[in-house]
Amino acid sequence: MDVEMLFSNMVLAAEAAEAVSFPLLPSLVIVPLITAALIALLPANRGEYARLVALTGSAITGALSVYLLWDFEAADGGFQYVVSQDWIADFGLSLRFGVDGISLFLVVMTGILFPIGLLATSADHDPKAYHLWVMILMAGCMGVFLALDLLLFFMFFEIVLVPMYFLIGGWGHGNRVYAALKFFLYTMAGSALMLIGIFALVFLSARANPDLGLTFDIRDLAGGAGLSTWEARGVFGAFALAFAVKVPLFPLHTWLPDAHTEAPVMGSVILAGVMLKLGTYGFLRLGLYLLPEAAHDLAPIFLTLGVIGIIYGAVVATVQRDLKRLIAYSSIAHLGFIIIGLFALNSQGIQGAVLQMVSHGISTGALFILVGWIYERRHTREIAALSGLQKSAPLFAGVFTLVMLSSLGLPGLNGFVGEFLILLGTFNDEARWWGIVATTGVILAALYLLWAYQRVFHGSPDGENATMADLRVSEFLSILPLLALIIGMGVYPKPVLDRIEPAVDELIVHIEANVDGFEEPEPPMIEEHDPRDLLVEAFHEAEERHEAETAVEEEGE
Image (cartoon, rainbow, N blue to C red; front, side, top):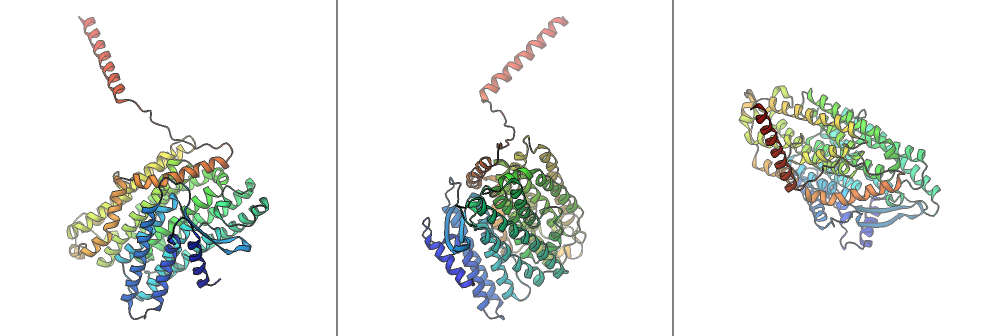
C-alpha cells in the first residue's frame, strides 16, 4: 500500500470516530509527515525556509498534543479518542489509534521536545535534509505511542530507525558512521525478533480463539488470548529482547554511548528524551498488557537486569571524561529505575515508571541541549578542558545546576517524584531486596553529577574558559519551558498522576484477572494516627517519666 493510500485511510479512520469531530490522533502523525513533504518541495539552497517550516509543523503538532492533554478525561482509565479504519481486512489489519493515561504524557512530551529541540539547535550543513528527517522521526515516535494495532505499532517502531540513522551518520561528530551503523544493526536485530513475536502471538491466538479470528488489535489480544504458558513466555521473550535493545538494558546497551557521543545535539535530545521510551513503553503495552502471566513469571529477571543497569550505568558514568558520554551512561541508570518500577507490578511502581519516563525525557533533553551549547562555545566536551565556567557564564551555570539537580532526583524537582514512587513500589514482599540495592543508585547519581559539575563550573577559569559567553536571551527562552516543567512537575505532580493513575489501576486489575493467584504486591502502609491521639500519648509518656524521676528522687532521700 503506497503512502497516499495510507494517508487517506488514516483520515477516513478519523472521520469514522464518534468520540471527536476533529481527527486529533491521526493529525499528530499526519502533520509531521505533511511538514516533511513540504520541506522536500523546498529549494535546497534555502535552508532557512526548511527550518521555518519544520518549526511551524512541529509547533502545530505540539499544540495539538497540549490540546489533547487539556481535553483528556482524567477519570477514564481506558483508551480515549479511539479511531479505527479497516486497512487490509482479510488479514485483520486496521488503522487503529487510541490514547490512555499511560501514553498521554509520552505523546505530550514528544510534542514539546521536538519544537524545543529545533529551536535550541541548528544544522551545520544541508538543513533541508536535516529537517526533513527530523519531521519523519517525529511522526514515527507519535505513531508508536498512539498505535492500537500490532503491525501498525511495528511499522512506526521501525520508521524511527531510518531518520535517526541518517541524523547520526550525516550530522554527527567524529566516528559518526560507525555509531550510526551500530545503532541501526542493534535495533534492527531486536525489531526482527519483535516481528516474529507479533506473528506468533496473532496466529497462536487465532488458533486458540477461532471466533476471534485473525486480528492485530492490541485490545483483543490482551491477556495472552488463549496462549499456553510456554507459548506466552516465548512470545514475551521475543518482545523483551527487542525492547531491551531499545531501552537499552544491560548487557545490550553498548550501542547507546557511541550513538549519543557522535549524534548531533538534536539527535541526542530525541534519542534520550523520546526514543529510549519506545522500549519502556513497549514493555508496558506489549509486555505487561498483552502477556501479563509471562511478565509476572519473568519479572525477577527484569528486576535484576534493571538493578544491574542502575549500578553499572552510575559507576561507569562516574569515570567518563566526556560530558555527553557521562549523560549517556546516566540514561542507562535512569532507565534501569523505570524497568524495576514496571516489574514491581503494583500501582506505585508503574505510576512512578510512567512519570519517570516523562521526567527523564525533559531533564536529559535539557542536559544534552546545554552540553551542546558548551560545545558550540568551547569546541570540546572533555571535562578536564573545562573549569570555572560559573564565573564567566553565571546564568549558564545556574540553569545547568537546576537541570542537573533534577536529573539526580532532588526533592522539589521532577526527577524526585518518579524515583520515589518507583522505590516505594519495590518495597514489598516480592521486590524489596531489588529496591534496597537500587537505592544506592540515587547516591551514585549524586556522586557522578555533582563531581562533574564541580570540575566543569567550579575552580579558576583559564584560557577560553575565562571568556566563554553566557546564555543568550534566545537560548534561555528556548529552554525555559523545560525549566518550568522541571519545577512544576516536582512541586505539583498531582495533575499528571491524576491522569496516569486510572489507566495504571485498570492495568493492575487486568493483570490480576489474567494471572492465577496474583494480587497486587503492596508496599507497607504507614499507620495513620489522629494528631490529638499523638498529643495525648506524648502527654502520658511525659507524665510517666516525671513520676519515675520523682520516685528515684524519693528513694535517694
